[in-house]
Length: 181
Length: 349
Image 1 (cartoon, each protein chain N blue to C red):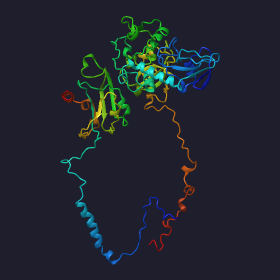
Image 2: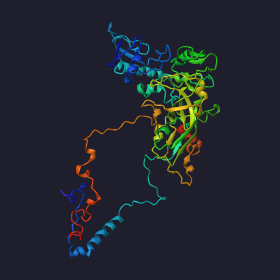
Image 3: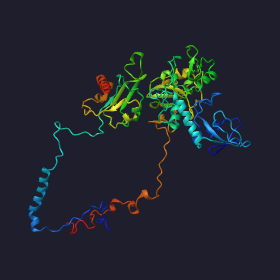
Image 4: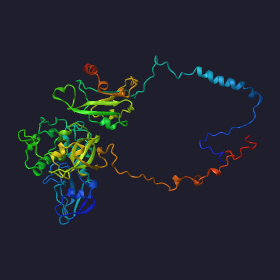
């Protein structure tokens, strides 16, 4: 078998070089054929949407920005155990632990807490492994459709506890909702 | 004396315990041990983790021992046959012992500084259940301050008595011990006495759980984020051979060097352990190697890399013979197109 005949993909076609007939040389039929394909697409479902008036449906497994949860009493769940940072494939998470003082018992759930907790949003790949590693139900990837805002400085993408911890009002509201049910 | 453990035969001295003989063989037959510490006299026999089945007492008396024996305190006899890993009875007993040890042990591994190098964590990972059947409240103790260097978490204690033996055998005077009885027994100093002996820090190293931890390292980092190095310094009181746990250029913790059974080879003094945290104090020898499955090896490249061998036809990676011929550029006829006809032939235009 010569190399001209081998088709590894099985899709190889030999182009014929035969002469065209008079009708074919007029190209009229070919033009209408092509036009037909074009017109058919007018009646098809459109692939585009009018963003931002219309928004696409999110996947049910969509993972948005992170949130560090508070428990029912508004105390932070995170104990800075470091398992999220260990599991993070992008090494986006860093933390510094501190010991809870006697008068901070309403702020943190365990005797150890994260005094600094930072996620580098430029490194984060939103894989959700931190959420799976967390033994304290502290870090969650929310379904928030808000994306990380654009900025000029790299430092702006390092989200600290001010941006990550669940707002206290939200924790209060959650508790009220839970009690109402 | 000849002893057979799980089918492995070994020649041992009289007076060797089954656990020591198993450790000489090494590998999977070594039963876990929480309270036994080879450098401490009189340790062992308390945690019951190392239970093993003696299927043949000795050459003179070949009857099997009716009950499972604690291998750390049972001496070897000539011709003894022991089953550890291979015996389902032992496996079940170890599961039960693990469950008992975990009854009062709090689930605070995320907070505990020992996590990652904890014997109880390893034990429960291997033998334990993923959930607890214990529904009663766990025993708890008031936190007690036992000095500026050592943090006591009595809730985590499994009462192995190792720290008591360290204080008895390494230091001159012991100021702490096990108080009360039964469920109330707890490690404590005699009426709020601070432990300040020069070698008291070794209690931290021998503690199999996180009951005694280093106050200077408290919550500073997790074990697996540190890079351990073997280091030594010229110390007037101890051998000065330690492992330093570094984070960047900072020495966060200094411990004794632990062997594969997590036992300290040489006890170090408190001044090495707590006061010398400058890199300039130490002569760093090299990275400390841990067993393969340890979490300390995370992000650590000290392990020996084994070459991957693909078992296949030897020549298959080399390709076809005709492809392996090296063509010189001069041999290529650029006048010939791929269809085999010369460039200027009629067909190619």
